[in-house]
Structure formats: structure tokens, C-alpha cells
Length: 270
Image (cartoon, rainbow, N blue to C red; front, side, top):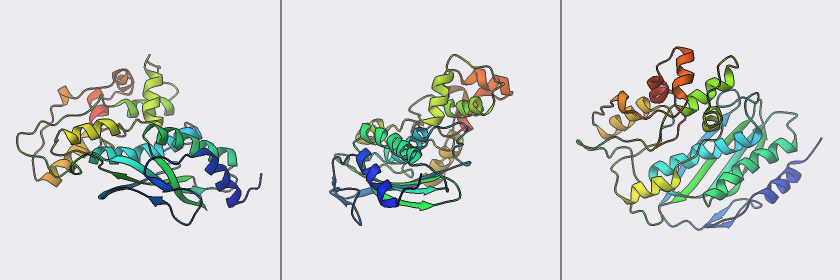
């Protein structure tokens, strides 16, 4: 089916809803936002065969994840999301239905967090790329929480059990693995991570000294916090909370479950 960019944008406009601080969304040369200063901005992308595979993901999963990883960055700063700008790279032959489903996945998550998909761009690409920029405001939080504020004596904590995404990816890629009872939750953690925006804002309001989201694994991200703060971070791996079902998957692969939890990545806890 042949469709022009204008026709495709018209379909997308019927999917998304303007919310909150967005005064003008999709349809003009630029969006108009009513964000009080300072503005908190983040940008990330998901790339086919790097961050997802069509063999194990639905278009709604791809759209959700592309927005979720960016909202998680705002959560780590204590910010409330306002708007998202989406750059979409599409291979030849991509159908309008796939594009609409990607946007429906994004829009569902955006609606849950009061965020508007306010614009972007569409281009031809060798593989599917969803590149998202998000903008937010502090809205009642005194200042953004940075990763360089850790102090001697601080307690290092995580806001949820870890390892689910890594275990879910293993289950998606290896059909020979025995499926634990928690398979659905593990797979969902990989396909559709939940950004902890509300919790990030509450932590910021309560004065946490430093925060970042756990996107690349607890050990690597804690190392970033330590380097930024000029501090030493000590982690007792025996105390790291491991998501239900992770141990069963890890055992089948001959991996210590603590390694899934501390190094698996893409958990998006704070």
C-alpha cells in the first residue's frame, strides 16, 4: 500500500492527544510548550536488531519501549514529563498499520504519564529506528536530582527487584528454556518496561542526594554514580533484590542469578 507522508501524519494525529503543557502539538513547523523553567530534556533511541527484534516484539512493544526509556531518564531527575518528539526511521515496505501500532504503544504510555507526543519526523531508513526526545518540568520539586550528589554515609537503594528484563530476553531468544510461572512478567519487563516517574518525583521531593535509572545494569550504573560524585560505592550483592522467576532462568543458563540482577540491564528501576 502506497501512502504519502502527509497522509501518514494525518493518521498519527488521530492517535495522539494534546495534554497539559502542550499548547500546540503535531501539525505545524514546531510544537508550542508551556513548560515553566527549568526544562528537563532527555533523548534516547531504540534500533531494530540492537534494542529489539521483530521476531520477538510487536509494534506496540517497540513504541512503548522507545518512550519508556526516555521517561525513565526524566524519572531519575525527579521531573514530570510534558512532551515527546519522535523521529521515526522506516525501511521500505513498512505498512501504515505498523506505524500506527508503534504510535499506539507510545500514546498509551504517554497518556498514563500526562505526556503529549507533540511532533517529530519520519524518514526512510535501512532498519526501523524510533528516536525520542522528551521534555519535562520540575513542577513542585525544588531542583533536579543529579547523579553527582552522593555523600559519604549515604545508603544506596534500588526501587524494585532486578534481573527481570535480562531473564525475559533470554526466554524470548531461547525456546529450549523451561518456562517458569513468572514467564509473562519477565517477558513484559523486557518488552514494555515501566518508567518510575511518580516514584522518582516523590524521591526528589523527599531530598534524595543522587539518583539515576538502572538502564545498563546495577554495577555499571552505580559506577557512574560513584565517578560523578567522587565517592566510593559499596554493593552487597547478597542484598540485591532479584525478581521472581529470574533464578530459574539463570540456573538453566548456568549463570548466577545475582549476575542477572546486577549486570543484566534494562530494568529501569531507580
